[in-house]
Every structure is written in structure tokens, then in C-alpha cells.
Length: 299
Image (cartoon, rainbow, N blue to C red; front, side, top):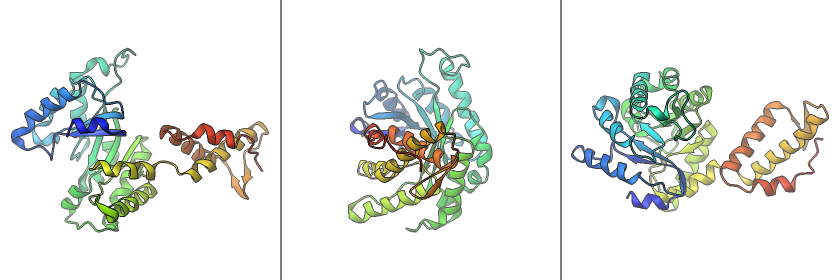
């Protein structure tokens, strides 16, 4: 399973020490991941490890082993119920890897370890403000729908309406505290046409709530998710036209102008710039689109 992940082309792969590993295999799994992360896979931008929950009593052993791997980028912390969970992980990270987390760390050492927090309970949702402030290394929130449903005795339905409040709260908190990653729930259906359609619908819904990524549990889901969360061709064309014309409008001293009969002002331009940056990060042909619209003028 570990070796198969080397063939993926994804933003992040999270190697699991929690639910997928039985208690008797925890130590072996730590050692396997430590050895595996001696090298880096070309197509994986971020190597993450999901440790066991802080209150399980296993987190310290997990961190002490996997943080020594040279190619680990991120720790995924499950069942984060309060800021104390993240403070514990942050303290251990600083203790094990002081050279990567010093205030004046050398540029020759790898960057600090990132933390992703799994939001899985009602308590966590009601304490998102404290959680988002808990660690300088926190880079995002992940919604764990199945554990959340268990906590609230909910039944998951295709509409996902039972999760609307929690998902909206997570996406809003991530944006409020400038966390780069807001990762939506797992789609448990992934086989056949029906599974693909369900996945596409969930991606559209999640993006509409403010999430900028989604957890995948099978390689077949990756392409669908990447396409859904990347700017569409129409979005990129619109954004490039806006940003190109805005540069010219700025030179003319015009703070507001129109395009295709619609008023364009600072918030719209900001959205367009964000789309262009995201398209570049997704590897889309932004240069070609800019060349196509280089003569776009503000109306």
C-alpha cells in the first residue's frame, strides 16, 4: 500500500497510524512509515502522517518516531476537541525538531512541520476559534463526517444537509484565521457511475461552502476532485480578462469600470486574482490564456 502511493500525483498523501492500524500493529506501522519517508515521491507535494489522538496515549510515541523521518511535511491530528490537543503536538514538534522551528531557523534546514486538525465532534465545532489560534503551525482544518455523525447520532444522507452547519462553520473559521487548507468530508461512494456522480456532487457542494479540497479514500477519486476544485476554463478566462483590464484601468486612474456590462471593483478584482493564482498552482495553461487576452481593455 505504501509503495503504491509513490505513483500518485496529488497535493498531499496522509499515511495513517490511527483507525486503519490495529493496536498490536502500531509500533510496526510507525517503523514502516519512518523507513518509507526516507525518500520523497516525485508526484506527491506534501507527505503527511495521521497520528493517533492525543488522548489515546499513543500520540507521543507516534510523533517521536515519524518526526525523525527526513521527508515528513505535515502531522494530521485526529479528534481535536480543544486547543490543548494542538498545543501538545506543537510542543512535541518543537522538542523533537528544534532546528526546524527556531525563530531564526537557517534557510538550509527544511521548513517547519505543518499541522492539519481533524474536526470530528460537536465540541470541536463549538470551539473552532480557540482551535484555529492554538498553533502557529496549523495550516488547515479537515471535516471528519463519520465521527461527527457518530457524536451527534446523525444518519448521513446523500444531501449532506445534516452536516451543513458544521461544514459552514469549519470553512468560515478557516478563512477567518487565514488557514490555507479547508478540506471537506470523505465521499464513501467511489465505485461505478453512481459513485462518480455522488463524488462530483459532493465536490460542487463543498466548493460552494468554501472548502478548497476534499479527502480521497481511493486513487480513482483523485482526478474528479482535482478537476472539481481547480478553476474551470470559463473561470480562468474571466479572471484573466479581469486582471488584464484592471492593470490598464489602474494606469488610467479608474477604480471601478465595467466588463461585459457588469461593474468591476476591488472585490471582483481580488477574486479574479485569486482564481489566477489557483490556476497557476493547479498547473493550468495560464500563460496561454494571458496571451489570448493581452489586449483586453476596461470598458
